[in-house]
Length: 90
Image 1 (cartoon, rainbow, N blue to C red):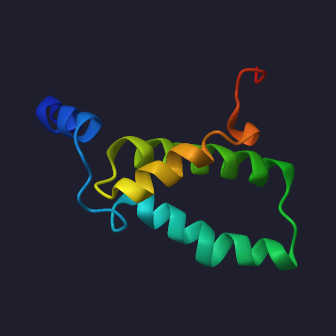
Image 2 (image 1 turned 135 degrees about the vertical axis):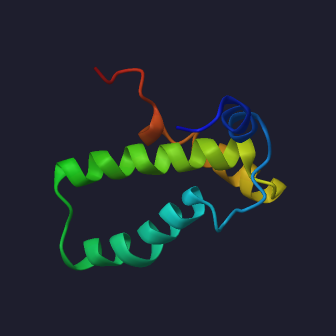
Image 3 (image 1 turned 135 degrees about the horizontal axis):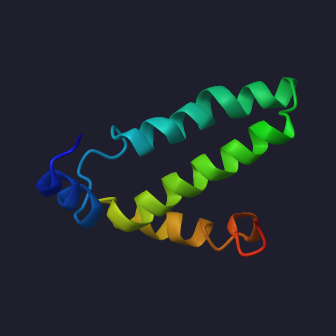
């Protein structure tokens, strides 16, 4: 379990580890491994839904916590894409 003090730091401060943090590693995993694989073998609907959730989480974290202002802005703009609109999801 993460101590409360560390959890608060993680939730409310800048991440100085990007792109070596878990979000950066997840983004690189999609960019270098998963997306290229999908070019040759299309993903299932379940894989697409999981990717949508993973990528939205990464973008939210980068947009809120990344130390790089350009990366934060890019993530915020990407989240405006309707694919990440979850209002209609049950």
